[in-house]
Every structure is written in C-alpha cells, then in structure tokens.
Length: 302
Image (tube, rainbow, N blue to C red; front, side, top):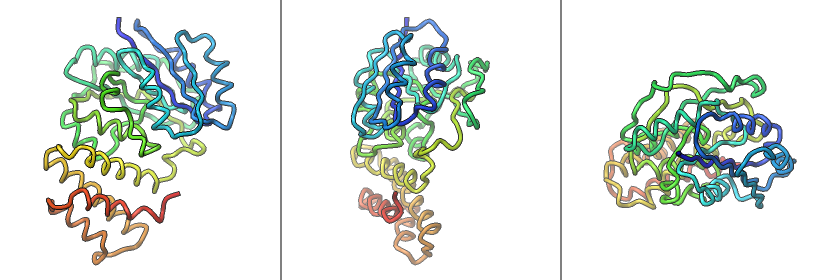
C-alpha cells in the first residue's frame, strides 16, 4: 500500500478551514495517510478551529509556531512527513475527491517521473464546489525539459501537485530566503531531478480575492519569483551554461518590462542595457547581471 503525507501551512485562514478539511476528509483511495497542519502564527482563531475540525482525522498533527513565513512552515511539514509522497495544500484551496489518488496512480505507474500535478480553477466561493466532480484520469502529458519550464514561470501552486517525499527532503525543501511563493523555489530545486507529469484537468479549486492573499501584491510576486531564480543559479553554479544563460534572460527581461511599466524608463536606461545582455547571451558575470536586474523592484516592494 502506498502512502501520502498531507502538508498544510495555515496563516489566518479560519474562514476557509471547514471547506479545506472537508476536502481532505473526502479524498478517495486505498492508501495510508497522515495530516500535518502548521499554524504559522495565526492571529485569528485558525488554531482553535483546526483542533475542533480535525478531531475525526486519524494520524493528524497540528503544530503552532511564531510567524516565519510559508516557506518555513512548509519545510517544517516536509521534515515531519513520514509517508512515501507529500500532497501539499494551501489553506484556502480545496481539492476534488479523486485528486490525490489520480496523481498517486500517475506516479506509481510512471516510475521515471518525480512529480505529478493537475490544473486549477478559480471560483467565487468554495461553498458550492462539487468535490465529487469526475474527470478523465488517463488524459495526461509527460513534461520534459522541466528545468527550463520551471525557469520560465511558476508551473503550479502547492495545492496542485504530489511529489516524492525523499526528493523533497533531499533538496532541502523550500528556499527560506524567499518567505512566500514557496512552491516556486521548491519546483526549481526538484526540476533538475527528472520529468513531471501533468493531469490535464482542474483538480485544485481556488477562491477569487482571498483577503490578504500574497498573489494580490503583484510587485512582490514578480520580485519573489525573480529572486528565487537568482538564488537558485547562485546555489547551482554547476548548471549547464545554456541553463544559466536562460535564467539570465528571464530575469533581465522581467526587470526591463517592470522598469518600462512602473518606472517609465526608456531604451537608454540601465535596465534596458541589462535586458540586452540577457537577449544576446552575455556569458560574463551572469549572476551579477541577475542580481543587478532584481534591484529594479526594491522601491516598489510592500
């Protein structure tokens, strides 16, 4: 029998917890499971609700810590996970009842694949989501060149994927230098180990306009993604030159677009010069060029 650790970081998600825990309770399939909730210093009644709503869940751990950010909270869950696979879940999302078993089957049947994920769909309210919505489990795609795809953009949010626990531990989990958008740094770290597989159906349901949602702050989000990529290439200088050049191109292009839009800079600006270095694949000072490009966001961060 296979096994799954459900890892759920929580910060001020009291109004969503009823729906989230119900979707966990409804997960179908014959596999061993454990639940790990990490309350990351919530100031609402999330912790109290967690204690009440999880009473009927077997093998359930609830930890409470001072606020250290979602990357740290996720890493706490990874360290505690004992099952073969980890299924992450954001504490304001729900997953369909067949989500975990469908992703689990894809990984078990494709041993050369290290991570399985599905699509997402947004709704106005989680209240009326049909958790038993059916979908075609055989409609999937093998994703190669995962490193380049991960460098290009964030491929999924935490609620969309299932991954081998041993690899999560091996790569050291999320980069805690980036406190939020934790899945992106983890995806980058995992992408060097093999192929992913994508289930071509929405399996994670997300609400629109969550109060205080990190993704609402676009400037911060763009910076975090670019900074995570910069730190990734700094930590992995052994990457092939083409990978380093592609990272430089992504970071400098993102910085130039930001400078044009928010700073109203033109073609004679410093940011455009950095962009040209990325476009033409300048091989010298790649990391320094990336660090410089990421300075464009500093006056705009919340």
